[in-house]
Structure formats: structure tokens, C-alpha cells
Image 1 (cartoon, rainbow, N blue to C red):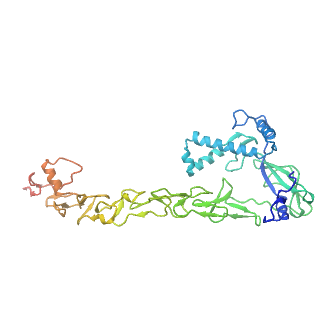
Image 2 (image 1 turned 30 degrees about the vertical axis):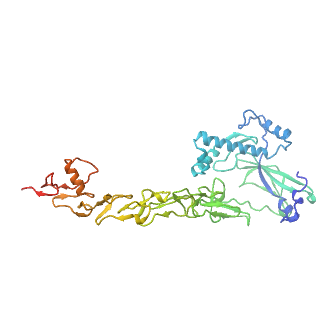
Image 3 (image 1 turned 180 degrees about the horizontal axis):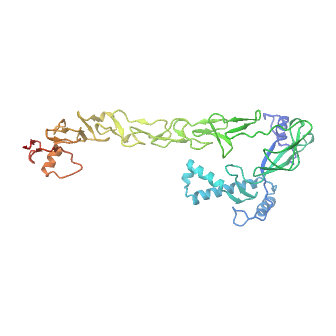
Length: 426
């Protein structure tokens, strides 16, 4: 019994009239968890020693609260969350940072933990139905019914619901235009039989197929709205990845931001070295030749012509160096010079002209030009006269770093003048 109607004291500028509020609230059907377990001697899982009776005694005596206070629901919700966090941190080895990052992996693990949840709470044994967010516990189906001349208001228990089954109390269900119905016995949603009042039948109960949701307009099943996806474990449509949940609709994440969770309420900024286009569910590393010095960028900044970066995901312009085929100090394109004709630098970031290597079958002379390999010799890529003379002076030691021309079979030269090549006598 609610007694006085709370909306009768609303200010005059409230958008709804008193009659509209009474019409909207009257006959509303609600589903609430049974808020007081029957076996009050049961010890509560989230307490060192307290029983359910101790909890409700505290509400009744200390707080002066109704035994069916929603504090019981809140207590069990807090216990559920605490047990899940404990398992995430200590059982699964996740860090606080991983939880703060809202990763899809952490979200999936949290769902798995909740699916396996089983503990003793203030309302009863708390479990969840497989593949469903609904608790596997008694749910009380009630209806708000206004008394004669709207002088009183009561919540009338119609049925209890557990594991897909209704247990009807035999109380009349009020329907619009004076219609009533009466559910009796035990039944499921699909096979409930109603005894009807004299003024008309109960409208058909619509069960939507997977992927669709019930619309209150026309009592019909509809597909999810744009930018939403149906999530079976939640049984409803929520904003898809790359979108932000607002009061009215799903708003796409702007360029430079992303969301990795269905129903996300925040779009996170991309880190330095990354970027994203709008409506993204992840950030992309900046490609070679570009960098991202700030968080939340929609595009990476280009190094410029003749410049590149050694690696992807560069975070500063200082990472820009001369590209392959050029040499110099980098950072600015004007500082990079083209390697001599028929040569190229071995890798990005070459600083000196000596880093420019002649192509195969060419030999770099002492003046830095690439000339044809002498007859009777094979010149690998990067071979130079300087390397040949140095190797000759040392008796041609083997080294992975010295690249010099070598004699072909049937030819010879002297150590003192290795470039003078002669054919062997037949």
C-alpha cells in the first residue's frame, strides 16, 4: 500500500497532468526479485559471520526499513560484483589497469565468471540462467492497482517466476477498458491458460525470435535500430562497437577515438603512434613514413618526400630519416641527397654517401661513382674499390662486413694490384 500518490505534489510546470500520471501508473506490471529469503538462518557468502536474519534485523531495527527494502537487492548486487572482481584479480591474474582499459578479453572473462556465479545472498541462492543475464532465483510478478476513486494504490502479487515457470497466485490481472484475466496453476510463457473477464480476451503474448526485440508499438517484433546489435546474453539491442551510447541514440566515435565494447558509454582516445577513422572499434599504428605525436589523432602526420621512419608507430618527427636510396641527416627533406647513379642506400636512415651501395655487377670507385665490374671479376651488390684494397692489404681476411669483388674461375691477379686481372693459360 503506497497511500498518497507521489505525483500529486509535483510542481505546476511538470509536463504530465495528474490524470495522465495515474492512468500511466495504474495496471503497470513489474518483475522484481524476491527480496527476503525464507531460510533466514543461512550464512551470507559475502560476510564473515552474518546470517540473512542478521541483515534484515539491521534493516528493520537500526534503519527502520521495510523488510522488502531494495537494500537487499543492492546488497546482493554488491556481493556479485565483489566476487567477480576478486576472481578477476586473484583467480584470473588480471591487473587493475587491464580492467580500466575495458578490453574485450576482460569483458568476456567477466561474463564467464558471472555465468558461473553461485552464492548465498540476502534474497536467496544467487545464480544465473545459462546464456542469460537473468538471475536463477524467484522473481515476483506484481501489478500496481489503484483503488476506488484513486484513493489508494497497491502492489498486487500475480505470480512467482523461477527457471522459466510461472506459479500464479490466482489474483485478477487488471487490463485496459475494464478487462481482467486470471492465471492459475503452474505454467510456462508458452502454455499459460487464462480465465478471462466478461469484457474481452487477453491480447496474445508475443515471443520474439533471436535477433529481434519486442516493440511496445503494435506489440510486434522488430530488428535492432541502426548502429545497434542484438546481444543474446543481454536479450536486447545495444550500441555496436565503434559507437557511444547516449540518452537518445547511438553516436559514432569521432576520428581519433574508438570503443571496443557493446553499449560503451565512452569513446577512448587513440594513443600516440596510432590513429583511427570515425566509427572505429580499434586504433591503427601509423605506417612507415608517418608519425602521431598526440593522443586522439584521426590521421598520422607525414614525414615528407624522401623521408621515412625505421619502424611503424612513430611518435615524433625526430623518427623521420632519409628513405632508401637517399643519404643525409633526415628530419627535413632538403637534408636528404640522392645516392649516385646506379646505387642505392642499403636501408633507411643512411647518413653518408659511403652508405650508398652500387648495384650487382658494378663497382664503386674511389670517387664514389659506380662503374662496370672489371672483366674476370664478380662484383656483388655494394662492392667497392676501397674494400678490395683494404682486404688485399690484409691478405683477404673473411668478413661479413667487407664487400669486395672476387675473381671468377680461370682468372688471377696480384695482391699488390688486385684490379689488374689476367686470364689463366689454357
